[in-house]
Length: 328
Image 1 (cartoon, rainbow, N blue to C red):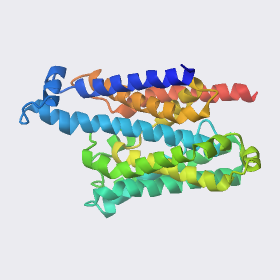
Image 2 (cartoon, one colour; image 1 turned 120 degrees about the vertical axis):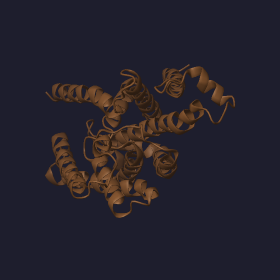
Image 3 (cartoon, one colour; image 1 turned 60 degrees about the horizontal axis):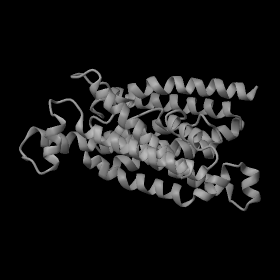
Image 4 (cartoon, rainbow, N blue to C red; image 1 turned 180 degrees about the vertical axis):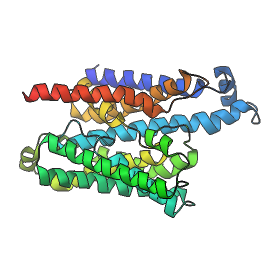
């Protein structure tokens, strides 16, 4: 068995175990045995039935979809922008999606199905805006991150302004800004699933071009790859994935930074496996952090975005420091 096969199988088993734990363990006084009884066709009027179908199942699916979407989006952004620190939550892509979700809540509060597509539009504007700013100000890694910070700050200010003038636009601005899966519903996931699926399909269909693009622009051009065309295509795919996730889980950060780097460490020699490994890692990361957030301080619950921030901020600093040493 090859090394990448073993890693993929181990991650798949870890993913299955994380899904099972997310469905069977939680607050609410419902035991794992009661959940198993529900799966066997138990009483539909019971509290365990309602908790499983209307709380734990949507929450688990939301964590899986968000983990897969944000991790693959982060990998695509790092590839397209040529910066290992690029991630949807770092360079403003999530904030662009979040701003349009707020705008949709103000302008069309009765059309919940529009939120993922508005989020996609906002993520597109932010991703292409950061790319153009980085090209205008210089091609260095620092220029890209500074452009992303500027865009992130501006979009965050716009969201705060909307909430100031329309305080009822969103049920909980703070929960949306931190990010979490507690309020996710099957209806939200149903509307977001087409964008998520299309983004993943684009990333899978053009994996050869993505692998060539990772070699650099000059090498890709010499091999016959239309660099700008595929860069735009991958930016669109990343915007679809990030926008679909933000529409139901809020401004969840650092998943798109941690998972791609861990995948790169696990599969250094074979880029074809990295998207699969990153997707599995992102899903497991969201599931485990969400499980920790709702069980560590029972009956109180932390938003999962706080747990991810405790993990992601030191990881971001570590990447900056190691990148600086390599630069020297």
